[in-house]
Length: 284
Image 1 (cartoon, helix red, strand yellow):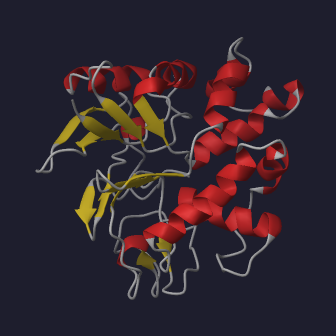
Image 2 (tube, rainbow, N blue to C red; image 1 turned 135 degrees about the horizontal axis):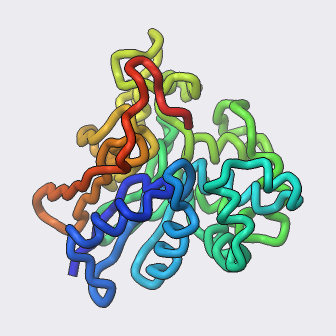
């Protein structure tokens, strides 16, 4: 009986199946935590989404930026849907798209298990957010996403601004919260995000810090597992376990056991494609 967190799948169905086989996943006893970005770029997003949906009784999912984008695409007209990339087209035009997207929309921005001692997010946390504040802000947006007016949220979530501030209201507030949870890598000590910075630490502009290294950041009593940052790779430190290891870019897909006294990591080779050319960074 094990609990495993798994990094960004990004539509890599075959790779996901190999990882589940390698960790000997038992759907009758084990639990999976998926760190978001289930879909996009891997060419098998529909199959991947169907797989995770089939495991919903034994898994928890947090939404990544690509998952939210898929939900927004699902609300567009058929003509607009046919303009998106073929991988996502197959999802929104599938006969079971309503069931799959309805289930996806019901997922969280943050999942925490205080008894286990872990919190899962897709990307990052604002410097001043404690675990309790992060849970509170996640619930704000989840309530909107799971409610009757979710289409307004999906239409208004795009944009890099404003930066997070406790005084924000309305769509600006929701957008800022979503950006923190699903897009953050670097920020200033005051929490200004630098969404254009996507490289590994050491490549960022002066005055920016990886979100988990910001001086004066809040103390958090839960260990954090996250994905999103493929150029960071596997990183364990500062109470954070980042496990997006670029499976879709030809890297690896990573699983981290959460209920083990020791750090136990299992990996399989990612999609069989060359990584991006040196100096070219993956897009969000």
